Amino acid sequence: MSTMSVSEARAALPEILDRVIAGEEITITRHGREVAVLVRPDAIRVRRADQALAEAERLRMLLDRGRNASLADAPSVSVERAEELVANLAAGRSSR
Image (cartoon, rainbow, N blue to C red; front, side, top):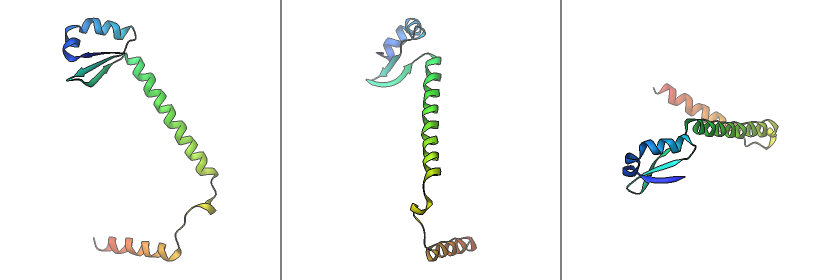
């Protein structure tokens, strides 16, 4: 991956676009800080798809873990605490 300043990029835009079409990624900097990366559109689509698939797999694993977990081990609320919470909700709604 190449890096160049905005000024350099402005002066060489046609050449930069040819390099991007060829598959190179070019980082543009302004005052020494990265502000943009030029990449081919198909490269972005692949990255986004890979990220979406990885997130879907992570969610699938969480769902499987949840489906297989014992509810006996789950934290619980006492009946008294549950009634207190319900009463607080009811009081909050009636004060509206």
